[in-house]
Length: 537
Image 1: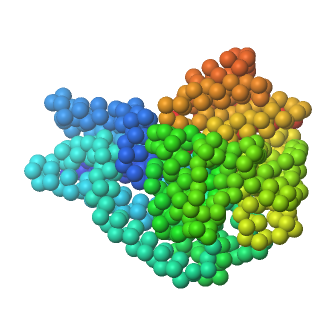
Image 2: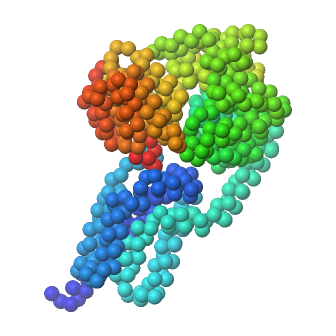
Image 3: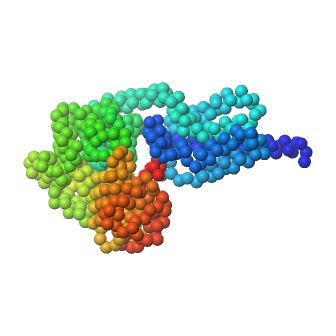
């Protein structure tokens, strides 16, 4: 074999290994960016996820660290050993990362592009500095640098975000100013905020459906419930002809809702619930209460606060700066709007809404089921009445309300199965109501498929145990998904009297679905309660 052929072969091998390392690094950086995005681009949340998930010490990453350490040892610091070793690791990593399925894939927004480009720039600058010292012809050092970058991908993403902080602040300020100018040009626009530990998205949809009978109404889409989500809605979707703007307001820490209110200056607000949600960041239920009531505190004297008296941490909070209407399904003593004569059926619900001030009764029918849905409709009706929407229009709209996807929606599929889909953002109150709906289903067996509830702080294990205890009397077969809450739920199920052979433990929803397919028959009902995001296992 000629020297020329050998040289070409060596160059080809080096080029191939470098290419594999680069592809592996880019895929891993994209994955880290995806998780950073799912943590709202907040370093403190991302670091908490790293700690809780163990991603920084995953099997694949430890494999990468071991390979890097081996390449630094004298034994492996040779062409014939290092090249196959690095190539093998890169190929295995690329295959595994490429095959992973994500519930919420990376969305390549402009910010995401800025972070990924900055991350690659950091790698390029570090590589250039090291190669300048080691010599540009030392390809083995370059490969080791790429391996090290793979192992430090989390830190690189955080460094890129830190580097971009001044730019992101300027961009955010510019967008916020543009949104504020748009709102200032629409002084007659009625802005209604909707917040709560749970129920805010469905209440937003119901309110939008009812008010649209009389007004040109727009709402923040999907889960656009952060300041930037609201800003984007204003800049891209709000039009001069709109009369009512319904703004969903989410929060993970104190001050989040105040920030949105400072931007939109709402006339009215709905507070649907105060409960143990996001306690990992809020730390206490009192902080949750204070944050949700940032909406009520921001309302003008001629505004309107509509708040749910069924929650203790709402009913005991006094609001004096604006008009208040309290609504309730259970704690009706001091409520201004109550629901009564509730009659559930598998195809819908009939109920009356009583306006306590004058005894006015409005009889309604909805295709929705569950007490939480009745409560959310109650809030929407209170707002609609205050804005002068007639009973006839309200009744028509309520009957036409469609189930919000993944929020206690019921559908029947071919084969005679009934699906109760409550997969979005499970919480103690909502999950209990979903179990009640499941318990009411007659005819076939009742299946529960759940990974439990998350972000409940120190109460997480106990609340999931209580959830399992209640589930034992509401379902015939339980399939517990994942390991995050497994022990707590299984303990609750057994304490509630469910036989062990009726409890199944699987690692993924794919496995749960496969098991369900082999067990379910026509007439059975399946409740999907929560679907954990990629940031939880």
